[in-house]
Length: 102
Image (cartoon, rainbow, N blue to C red; front, side, top):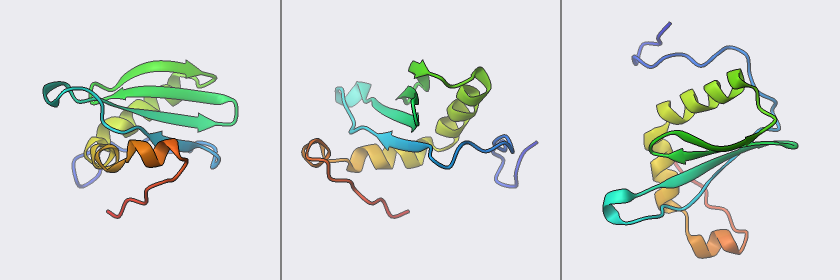
């Protein structure tokens, strides 16, 4: 099923409200830019390398949940790239967060 903007809907089953997402700063050369998205939910975690949408590590998430996370990161690539571009590595190291206005 698709929604009016042409994107596929995410599964109706929602994740735990404790699920958090962190986005790394951009890394790599101009022609090979990458960033990482980390999802955490208690003891469970999944790290996805972007923009190729590859699962780097996972612990505790089911195949169905990983599929949902991959679908989310694929659909939100533009927003995630903006977030990664705005992350200051020094501020991130110091534990400061950046609020993204969309």
